[in-house]
Length: 231
Image (cartoon, rainbow, N blue to C red; front, side):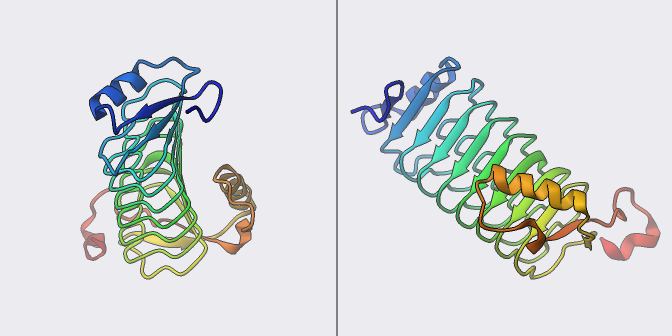
């Protein structure tokens, strides 16, 4: 069965995970694959370096699309802990919910989550853009260094704890802010940038001016005894 003329099928019900990743990692730039019977396996479609198109037809386990470079990966289901961890470029689109630490340490690319994301979404992110259609759990953007985290729903406790220079945009309620995170003014430039991010994430029914922006108060960059109470 073929879902498109140039799309090939990889059935994990008949082959191993190692064979899948080896096949995808050797694929050329024009490759397109649809993964059947993922059954929540961990480490699906990891370490890809070519702009291949990969659709995982079902739920993915831990660390799906990790270390991605240039590939475009779609998960037609939920994804477990660490989806798109350490992504460098390309895109990952989770059409369900994501577990904890989505987009952790990612340096670039775009991560879109249509549902909710668990705790520590965007932990230590280093340049990735993350758009979450739903809400995010506690300590999201913990030690985030650069990039953008867009949350169309609510954010849990300690948002942006020990933040560096990541922009955090939240449309809903924030339960509490972490150490050194504060609300910032939404400038016209921020509105423009957020409008582009929402468009990249396929969010066309929500306006940028419905969000509030959060960023670093810049008191924890270097330890000063005068700021000890902020740690």
